[in-house]
Length: 469
Image (cartoon, rainbow, N blue to C red; front, top):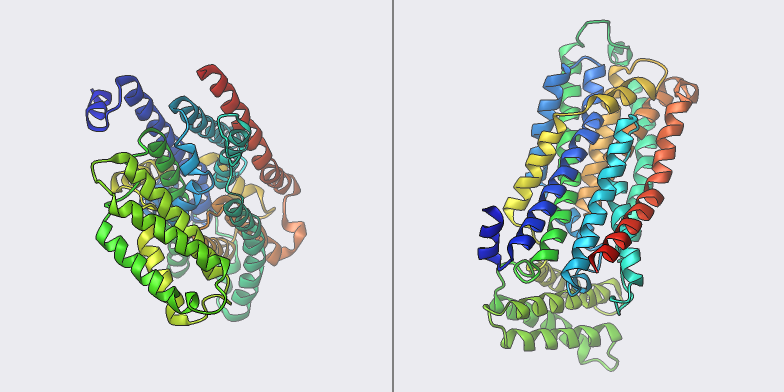
């Protein structure tokens, strides 16, 4: 019945409606697994410092994750989408696109479940990004892809830098923060291990619950957006015309283009016109022509407008990245503002998508948390986690995730918090306080995740593509 309804609304056949529902369900499963896979990152410290009982901690963390997804925006989701050349991909056959989506989803789920089963904190971000890179690489070599473009390497480089540097940042900043706490906090209770079957002082308990809440909230705002990005890739695969643009307004777009042209006018009248200005002028001209002929009932024209906006955005960004071309601050600000307005038509996610991912992540957070909690709470350091170590690791993790989300970059909550715990342990009693076996397993998972998921998703995509022919 649901697939028939989708068929009536979107013009899908029953079989395609069922496939769409299946892919949507698989994205929700991935985000559900992400929830219980990463829950330990937020709740391990409050559980092992006895600030909250386990069940209360995971329920509260689930609610905070839900709130984080709902209020986190979509900058990270857009970054995930932009790893693949969406405008090129959605022009391919439906069978190829479905094979690509399923391969990426299955690869990410398989590796996440495998690492969770053995209790190794592994990054869902690495898993997802490796899976997308794998299918993108194979797609670039398929004969159906005449452009030869399968991965947005500029975006991949930015994301890779974020994933690489964030654990190092978490480890070093945890050491610094522990030093600051020891220097300024007079009550040394915070540096002691929790008493057996005892609760921490109320002021320490309040700090730890607050840091747990912050990690959970910012985990939702970052990791939840990855699920939103995946869902939008699915929707663009099945329904590219319906989700090409959000509430497109031709008149408002024309005004934005006029402002961009006006801001460039001084530079087009100079003796030498830069290539960036010429490219932007050409993109503006073509978009104007398409807007004049725009018909809201013609879905193909919507897709054309989307492509034109993305081309213009790329040219405008190149213009802004060259500071010697447009030097006036007012002109640069005006162009940035109008670019943001234009990108709002293409960079969006329906509220029902955000809500569905929020529920999946929040519910997943409340289940299956124990395996990873034990690793983080007991097996990284040789001694029981102190109050200060728990608060330090979570505060650093929350700050790092929030910073990354602000820049629209996915970051590994798992690796940031694990490295924060390790840093806090080292700050207390040196490197000898770390359990080398656990650190080695976490490092091995960190090193293997990208190559394993790239190979796995690429192989699955190629297999699914052959079977679909």
